[in-house]
Image (cartoon, rainbow, N blue to C red; front, side, top):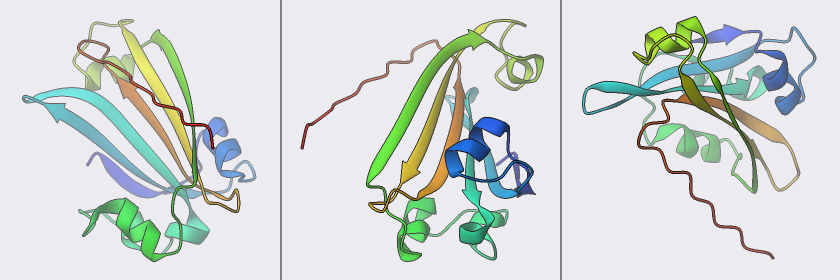
Length: 141
């Protein structure tokens, strides 16, 4: 866990969550490790109206995980919207992921929505591309 707190998210996260720019949200920033190496920076954002006063806004592990806590609060995923981008790592991302400056990274942005179309989580995952395989399965309903 790199950081947990409430702050104004980047504009694309505010838009994904339907927040007015400058409105704060709870964020949980994690570094995902594989075989002792950092491979992913995962930032999950939650509207303060949902996360405020919960374990989502506090340091430490969440019993049952964020998905269970959100479900207990009445927020389950009906739809997930994802966007994938490949770009050069920022200086900070390269340092965190132990990559050379300007190395390519995969950025996956995911927004989770309820059946009522309410966005309740927006995640930005920056991944080292080595060894990554993104697999999707779409089922028409």
